[in-house]
Length: 112
Length: 110
Image (cartoon, rainbow over all chains, first blue to last red; front, side, top):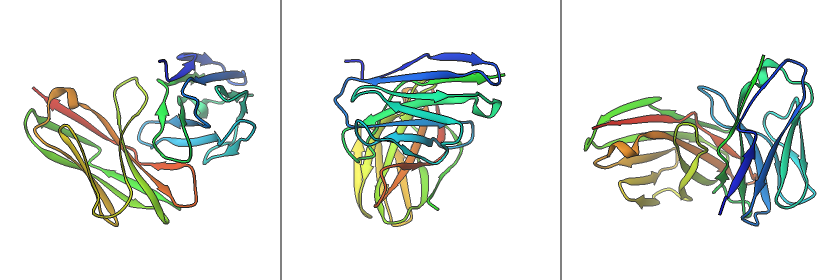
């Protein structure tokens, strides 16, 4: 049982390049989330999807777009990467509205 | 604006030396207070949910408690394998998302 799977695990980009982070869960969860984690700061919500076909902005959505491709998959896209987007990105899922989240292992992104 | 503050930022304990981690919160209409454990290079792992003041939850050497302003994670007779960063998060009544604290990095020395 894989849980929440994120790809890639590591990525280095140059300023202005674009990329997509992929996330898939196999727990039949309705809700999925993208967070970023920076040193000295708590996890901050970028976007979330309460159910297939819906997405909503979180605390720090600027510079990102998301797609809820189906119930299993939720992708995060950086259209024009900036150094300020250097971070560790976590995807998470849960069955409903509970805060008992299941997290992936993270995607470490560096923007030069 | 919701706020969650954890202290201390880092804590070093000898094996067997009990202590507590603090989580102060200002979350409108608190729906739930959550504790997570995060190992280096890994995603957070859920530990506990607390819903109302006075509630306590236990798991092995960990016990979480909740008041109207704070939550504590008590660690009794810790072992080196308890070394990790512990995160707390609050969820307001009307929202789906969590507000996370920045964590306490716990190191337990053998």
